[in-house]
Length: 238
Ligand SMILES: [Fe+2]
Ligand SMILES: [Fe+2]
Image (cartoon, rainbow, N blue to C red):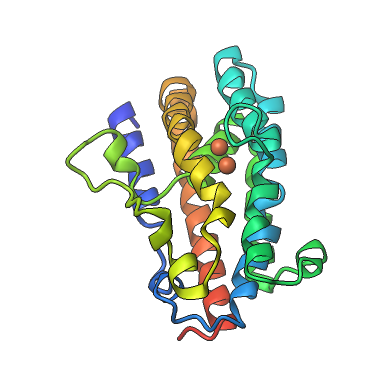
């Protein structure tokens, strides 16, 4: 697989990281008293542990250039020291706190079966399969969006960034806008993480590992999609 085919295959995976249930979450159709299920599962399945998942990629990687990008991302995610000012997982909890949810539920979250399966895929990809897959699944898949192509092609749609006052959680669920500190921080610092992610994967993953990276990304999006479907059902979305 040449570099161009590799990039196209990865972009195709990212473009499939869209679930038909998502508009129900952004249009206020998920009942307010079920929204905690979505936030708790997101927290437990990857947000709480995202710095650890990145760290697993870091410790496996023999290439200093890649480790430097991972270390910078890890430091920001774990501490907020380069931008956000606080650890990103901690900033996420501002959202359920601002919605008046019981945070105890987050500290004792039990993953639904499809979330456990998705987490199993994330653990396998970050522990057992070598640094190229660990880097791709954490920095490309988990941090990335369906709009990655815009990084390479300005005519491709960019990720929409409406004013925070128009964020669905503010509009439909009355979240005080200052609780969107994580969204604000991501708009500031994650652009750099997107560029670094593609640099690590396209410039440093050995050509002989490209097919395995694409296969792992495809397995991840399949597990993610089943997880999103199950969360939607739990939230009462058909
Ligand atoms: Fe990041
Ligand atoms: Fe982050």
